[in-house]
Image (cartoon, rainbow, N blue to C red; front, side, top):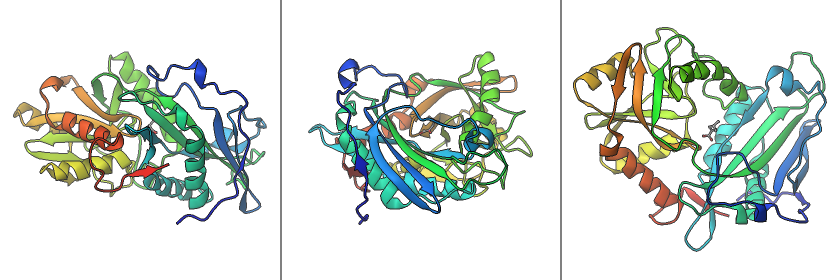
Length: 354
Ligand code: COI
């Protein structure tokens, strides 16, 4: 049980919700009426407040803007048929948040602040949870260093916040992915496993280059041999070869330990598929494709949900897939959506009622 938190609450006077159509939303563009804000000062969390969504006033010397001590999470809230609100596996994201915090030399956010703050905020803005399929309320907790000092050192002060964005799908169509051989995302000993803001900024150049070639995202490979696949854009990645689902393992610390990834592994196993978390080389992938054994390739993530990959471009070789004939990814996607929206049994207690 989480200890009660002293969260002060100031509510908006007029909701912005009436100006928005919740049925046709882009990802991450609109924000709800309220946000949570808390400050870490003199070694403790204080000023914990839920208040109207509003701009921050920051000094130009705010440390995070210069050295990137900033981390975040992505979580989703859904509504069931009766209109009850649920959050998907929030504790898993909470735990990952503090793993990222430790790696980035930032303070731990206590469970009651993260969890109770999120539940109170979602409860207050619950009317913003869309009911349309593939839509949800995206929850974005984040923390950044807030010292007003441009010396390179960990801050003494930090801000922890949660904002909410009613959102449609992040990727709405099957994707074309470029297997990246030149640029790298993560190395063993680096911060690849942390949800550090800079990991996303650092990926943008290579992604833009891939887009110029007509692709949507890149599939990253290991930094030494450019041989073993890691993760894809904003998603973990799964390959179905024969009757086995293979996803890169987490042991090198170069891949984000996705909550959706873990959920998909569980559901694939329940479907009777063998799942292997291991190193997977691009040579094994192309050989399986040539032998007709590479059946499906898809990405998983909170924002991405389960996104089919219709083409993988590696050097001048293109692997194309008939996404419409697939069985596994659509089954898993429907099953996960049904669990989230209360139409399928939630055997693992993934949904936490708000
Ligand atoms: C998520 O899947 O929640 C992400 O954080 C990916 C992206 C929107 C940055």
